[in-house]
Structures are given as structure tokens and as C-alpha cells.
Length: 151
Image (cartoon, rainbow, N blue to C red; front, side):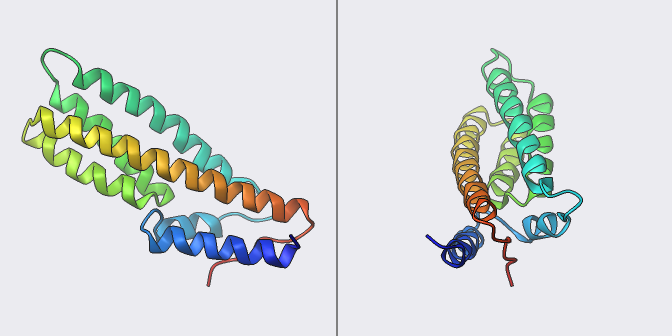
């Protein structure tokens, strides 16, 4: 596949992530902060998001498996996850966090457990999609091309 085809594929793929609601304009803003002086900026920020999210998901699972659930603690973890998903533009993860926080407010253990499963699902999806996006970018750069920007 030549560079032009890879670039078109990247633009199509990125566009689909926005259309399907996986990413929002915050991701575009993150991309705009990347330049020659910091070519791996987005990858580094998103990698930190992955690390933090996995810790938070484990903390949430532990907190919800206690005999008496500390909803304030659960809510604090969800709030942190919502903030970090918002900051990279992981829109669908952020949206589940909003519902999750409502369940915490209602002290609804079943609702919280359902939301935890939804977040794990959305997180796994967005992680997979972003890893694919970064692989495409690497292929373009390895082929000597430059990364096209979304319109």
C-alpha cells in the first residue's frame, strides 16, 4: 500500500471514530498540540490514559466487591476516570462515567456494577481503536509520509 492510500485510510478511520462517538473534538485539540518538537505527544498522553484507566478500573472493581460499598470512594474513582477520558476525547467512556456517577449518587450497587461492565467494554473498544490508529500512523511515517490532519 502506498503512502497516499495509507493516509486516506487513516483519515477514513479517524473520521469513523468521530462519527461512531468514540472520540470527540478534545482528541483533535490534543493532536493539534503535537509538533516536530514533540512528535509522540498524543501517543504519550493516550498511553498514560491507558495506564491510569486500568488502575482505576481495578480500584472500582475492588471497591464494588466490598460487603459495604463506599459510594464516595467509587464516585471519586469514576470522577477521575471521567476527567481523564474527557481530556483525551474518549467520548463514549466519558458518557458511561456520567451514568455511573448517577448510580453512585443513588447508592445503587447493581447499577454501579452494570456501569462498571459498560465502562470496561467501552474502554476496551476505544483502546483497541486508538492502538489501530497509532499503528496506521506508524506505517505512514515508516513509509516516509506525513500524517494528514482531519478537516
